[in-house]
Amino acid sequence: MHTFLIALDLVGTFVFAISGATLGVRKRMDLFGVLVLAFAAAVSGGIARDVLIGAIPPVALVNWHYLGVSCLAGLLVFFRYHDVERLRNPVQVFDAVGLALFAVTGTTKALAAGLGPMGAVLLGMLTGIGGGMVRDILAARIPVVLQSELYAVAALAGAALVVLGRSLHLPGAPTLLAGALLCFGLRYLAIRRGWRLPVAQSRRN
Image (cartoon, rainbow, N blue to C red; front, top):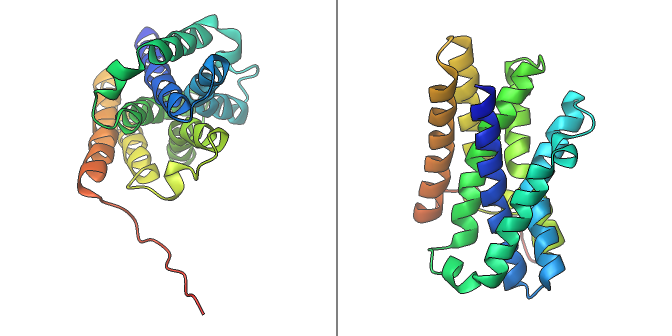
């Protein structure tokens, strides 16, 4: 189970890094800027999670695999950007995959650290949305989680399913996959169909 969790974490790191690097290229950043945005998108949520559960130093800062995977994704996008752009909305698609994987791995790590169900769900959500928020702030745009189709809600749903599976003593790996699929499915359908929470309407005098 531990190896499976690490594998999901690294896959999530890779796809989130692709989303960050793609946005960096779109913003016409140089190579260093693209790599920074890739790394920030990939590890910020996990770092926030580790700090909150007391896992100091955060694993992303002591395990070179996270930096290596992020840089690999950044270089891939920088030099093969046109191939990446052939995918439909690559930032959103890779972001949805990363959101799903990080939401379930974050929840699992929170439970292992002794957090209760509510705390684990919230920390799973934070792990999922943290990287995207930092990515968007560094790229000088309003974070997707604050204005786009269902985002944090999808992460909450995936995290809640993991907690429910743990409480029912269901097998770990299938529960993680089910939670990730639920989160990704909600996010992807929200993108395609425009599902969103009510948006604030301002009044102009």
